[in-house]
Length: 342
Image (tube, rainbow, N blue to C red; front, side):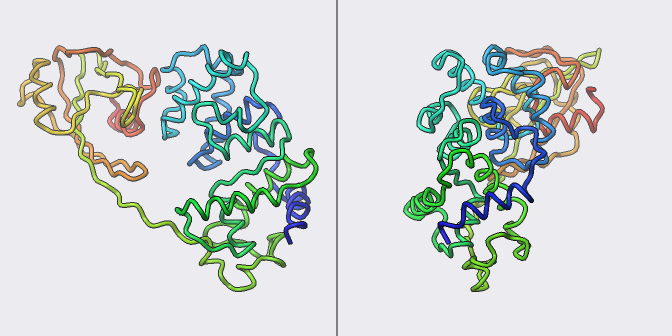
């Protein structure tokens, strides 16, 4: 089966795979950008962001020369903002350390900020037809089912086994690498799905161990659920007479790093303290409807308090248009729903 796997996958991808995605190119910049965006994010979402990003920053030089705020503004709503900060740093690495040209090898690509082994392999395979294997969640699922590989997904030893298995399946011809790599992605995303897989349409169904043994629902083993922690935040929304709202740039580490947000505090007492420093009395504060926002392993309960006037202290700016800066998604939604900014 191992010797036939690549041929079957390549034939299937060319006939039934996805061919309409805008990042299906041999341009390393476009491939790299799409691979970073697709980390932890659905294709449908990236289809909205990718064209805007390419239009705004058509080359890696344009991205490297940009201000971080401009990058985060375009990224706002896509989540996992460390990806955007790493993307910006990596663009500067490419310009400053690689003379503006993407390295061809996986090992060199892994030196870029935010690029791990699987992402580097995808760039090398798509852009430079290098014989390198990817191993994301979709590929792990395909391998575990087709070859009946059973192990703990969080176990490093089992992951090493999966990497070795994936490398043995690579096609011999370098020219087949883009179709093969895209085939792995397409098979896991559209056929061998986590739930309700379409086994009769799968090119591997005749040889699939999990299908033959009725273990599709069992493989791969599910990771242990990570407990979701709850966290309370308190926002102070200071409005000027002309409708502008005071925002501050978040620190480069922590939640919403590098984005602009209204003053944000871990406790009501801290928020009241800051309001007093701004000349806002407790009776001037209006409590708005609470907001809940889910992060990967955290559930935020945000309690906004608004007030007119006041003299803000510390660094910040008065914002009049919510599209002028990169804002946390729950703040953008709040502005839109409350019609405070447009």
